[in-house]
Image 1 (cartoon, one colour):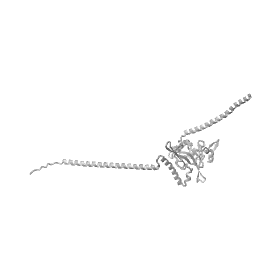
Image 2: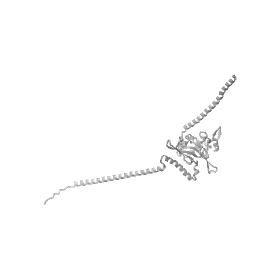
Image 3: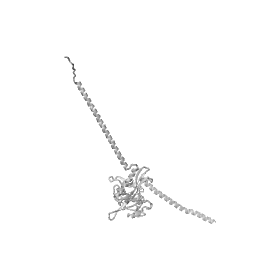
Length: 358
């Protein structure tokens, strides 16, 4: 009995000793996970504070239109995203900047899918090594990190960008905005015969993810004043880029090329969509383009009528003044004549004639 009691006591004392390390391990793992998430949140908040950017689009907007544009970097308004082709000191173009952010794991980029739509799910994230191998970019790998020379970054071949933008009406502030949503660099490589360049979309990136860093990327804002600079975030949020529409979010998921048979049809459709945006904005305020023209014509006619009346009143007034001056002049001349006549008669000698009787 005494022996059984001792064995039981030893067992009871051993269980806490074994269980305690396991509990400590779980608690340590939980604390490590909490600290890791807190560290990630702190870095994100710090980036937001250090690199301020525009506010995100509200989720409860009353109207929104999503449009995809293609930015040709050979155009003057878009050329600021292309130069310099290779980094020069602390200056670099947009693709080099995005590429370095991706390789440092500062931003997350997503594969370009066959349908061309952005897919921001975790399963579609770009793996760095796969991206380098797929695009034949030379690198040196050491302990999970990659070293790429600036000359090996194909930034000079990225001459196009796809951009998704949302034009929306914010009912809370009664204002219209056009805000970029996502960016996709497009690499154009000339084939061996140097005839037809092959376009390869590289990846999609959320604009909200990269905006804090774009606020630190300076672009040359003028061809005539090289001291004038603008941040890449300001460039996009103020819509200083120029791009043709190639797709809209529609129920059938078609791009314009699917239903525009000719180039002229494509241009007409692009103009029609652009006009839809301005027409909706006009209708919100109750003044569409037709109404504006009609009101302008009415105002012009009214101004012309008032001008004519003003001119007529001035003419009548001038005539009346002229008539009054003429009357006064005639009266003065008559009075002068009378005075002359009266003066002449008083100056002549007078004779008294007496009748005499004979």
